[in-house]
Image (cartoon, rainbow, N blue to C red; front, side, top):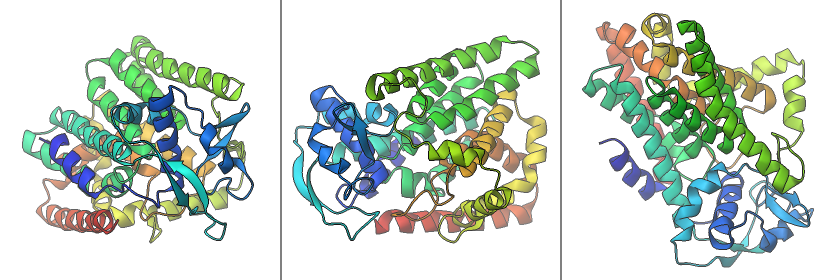
Length: 390
C-alpha cells in the first residue's frame, strides 16, 4: 500500500541522464562494473584520476594500479542486480564535471541510468514501507499510513534520495528495516544495521544507541550483543573490503582524512553555525524544507514518555548521527542539488518518535492539527516541485 505507489512515483520522476551528480555517479560506476565484470575496479575510468578531472566528474580514487570509487560498496551492491539484468552496454559520452564547470569535458563510458533509477527509487520506497510497518505498531492503521506518505513525499526522500543513486536511499532502507524489526527481532535488526554500515560507515552511530538503550532498559546485556553482533559484522565486512581494495584495513577506505580532522577540531563557534545553517539555511535547511517537523518538536517530551526502548534508541542514534555529521562535514552536502540530504538517515531513525509526538501532543490540539496540516501541504508541495522540475 505504501511502497508500491511510491516506487512508481519515484521512478517516474528520477533522473536518468547526464548531468548526474558526482556523488551518485560514483555509486553508479561500481554497481555497473560489479554487475558486468564481477569487480568494483574501474580501469576504463582511470582518466578521472588526472588532475584536471579528479574530484570533478566522479569521486574516483587510486587503488593499486587502477581506479575505484571512494565510497563503500553497500550502494553498489543494491544496484548491481539491476545492472546484471539490464541488456545495454555503457556508452561513451562527453561529460562535464559539476564541481569545476570550467574544466574541459572528458570522454568516458557512461552506463545506462535506468538500473540506477530503479535501485534508488525502490530502496527509498521500501524504506518508507518499512517505516509504515514500524508506525503500525505505534498508532492506528490510518495514522500510520498517512504518516508514511508524509515521510515519503514531504521530505528530501523523494526530491533527493530517490532522484539519483545516492547512498542515502539504501542507507534509509536498511535503517528503516532495522527499526521495523527492532521490536521483536533484535538479531535481524542488527544485521540490517550491519548492511547500513556497509553502505555508509556513519550509520554505526545509529545502530549503537538502539542496542545499548534497550539493554539498559531491560537491565540485560543480551540486546546490546544481539544488535551489536550484526552491526559489527557489517563493520568487519567494510574493513575487510577496504583492506582488499585499498591495501589497508580501515573504516575510512577511500574517504579523506579531512573528515576525521574536522571532527577533532575545537572550533565550537563554527560548529554551532554549521548546525544552525543545516536547520535554517534557505537552500539546505531541514526545518525550512520540511517545516511540519517544527510542530512536532514540542511534543517530543510527551512522545518520549510512552516510547518503547527501540524507538528511544533510534532517536538518540539519529541525533548523534547528525551531531557528528555536522562536526565532520559542511552542512550543505555539496552543490548540484537543492534541499537537504545529510538528515535523511537521521529522520528515518527518529521517525517513530516523531510519530508519537503527533499522537501524544499534536492530535489532541485542534489548532495544532490545523497548523501541522498546512505545513505538511507546504512540505509536500515544495518537494513535489523539486522532484518534477528535475
